[in-house]
Image (cartoon, rainbow, N blue to C red; front, top):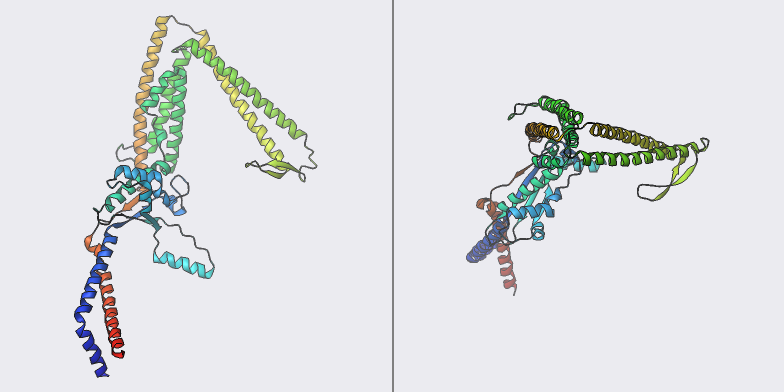
Length: 439
């Protein structure tokens, strides 16, 4: 036995230089290959950080799709931020991999649920995104490229899916556009805008009335009070002035527009009333004894034929008649409003000097209103922006590790590979020796 071992030991000892050299060369090659592959591929982590994420939704309630990070919109924006390599969107997409991250605990729960036949639903909120540059021998740019992708995706995600408070900003440009309208029309436009702001801030106040902005020192309750005072006092005062004094930039043109509106509204109201009466007449023709059992051919929302229960059809007709009646009533109120303005602007006259004075006063009032509105909007927007940041703590967070030469070398993997290659080399040398002895 010992003679057998000694003989094989002598064989390996004679071939030691070959075995060690081969092991070193192949191991170095293995390490170099791993280094190039690892150093030129970087993986970043992405976390979703908002309540709806646990349901697989975006902040706006739409379905979350992590692969939007590979969309043309995101990658095009990323290449605008960083593209020193001349890579195209399609080429960049092929170099990116996206996969979800889940803990061993979750994986075990999923496995046990499948074995037991139970259902276990898990929606990930953490993902890994890797980028591998094509030219392994050029300057490493994986960190810069992933940073650009992360920044671009965050911008696109927040623009498309984040809570949008643009309603809090009418903007100077929009106010400038209002100059083409008459004073009464401007008052109505501002009232509509401010009413939308009031609705938005009311919802925020109901959601978190105790939130206090660090930069403005205001709560949503304070902002809501500012908006309501502006709407109910300042704007209404301006509108009352221009209506009671019948001040207009071009009275005759405005009166013609009002008369034209009345004609159109009257026609639309007449259509709505006829529709309501027609549908009511159709309902009266149905025999109540058969409506519960009879079926009639109908078209669904895809314009496909199906058999509809008669009673259900009558419900649809009743709803149509009701809506037509409501619409007719709204149109009637608009007609009354326009007729009132026609009466006011037709029966009050001034000489040119007085009309000019009134227009100047209206312009000054409007300028003050716009300045106050911009100030209120600025406060409201800052408070809400802070609240969104506080509530979400950022919708998405990224972690991009710095490139490390030591980590990319993967010494442990190289040592294990060298060990097994050394053993394989020894085995091959012994097998070769045995074959030669037989010959």
